[in-house]
Image (tube, rainbow, N blue to C red):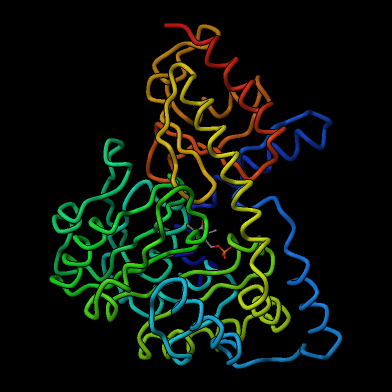
Length: 400
Ligand SMILES: *Cc1c(COP(=O)(O)O)cnc(C)c1O
């Protein structure tokens, strides 16, 4: 028997976002004043009441195994949140709490996919979806949202991509990386296609609280009974409560799927961290003013960035409606010359920005959209101003 390794594991692409972040960190460590627009997490501290709940959990000895799919009290709180915020009726036996939203998603694919099953992923997509699908033996099938449709896909596109092997469609609204959200009409049309073809929807609603302006979050599962049955709704505490390090995510699904995920999780990781579950409980049932304060701050940054970038030449963006990202179209800039060199790719543009302008951004080839970059506004306004000044000076140096 040769000492070969798993072909499946070897086929996974390491995250490119992390590579840029690592390089920016290294530059910072060397005393270079890099502005990092790469952040995929809120820059605020976890709210005090949440931290206090965790400290009490430790002090009172709530430090042992819990049921594999999470404590009943947290499931009850999640059901209430699903009811009040999402208009969704789930019972505690339909809830599985996991080690972060990513773990929830990976449990979902483990529960529904058989080898060769296809999962339709709209591009631009969050870079982990294709790799997760592959790790669960599924096959990613991509469709593209066009810029003039807010980078969103249409029900017709989904219909066209469906084959006998299609098992699920991934819906991420608000979207990482675009910040776009699907409207009620769009969701209704998608729900029709899903129900007609009898496939699942994996609804990643991680950024559901972070929607700005007039629009409201709509959970596709809340539209009617038929779509509810076919949807696995996934959310978590990471982005809304600035709790990325605590690792709590959760799903609402049919009892059947919940039981499968529970069983897979019971062997893979056992329960999510007991202390983090107490903290999550406080986050959901305690005062919500910290969430509101973060949202207000994000909104100010969003408007400022959108306005500044819209006024720059050779790059453009749509106004993001949610999450904390701005998705920038660099197609024009890529045809231009910088210091005599035609830039050509967003990867090269990212390199130039980092090396010459000391600004870290995320190139989006791994998000399925090669001519675009993603900027996060989970950094201070002061940093944003400085970073945008640098990007602007770069755009002014571009030549035909
Ligand atoms: C951050 C994120 C998640 C999950 O985050 P966790 O840190 O694992 O809770 C899921 N989906 C999207 C689109 C995200 O950006």
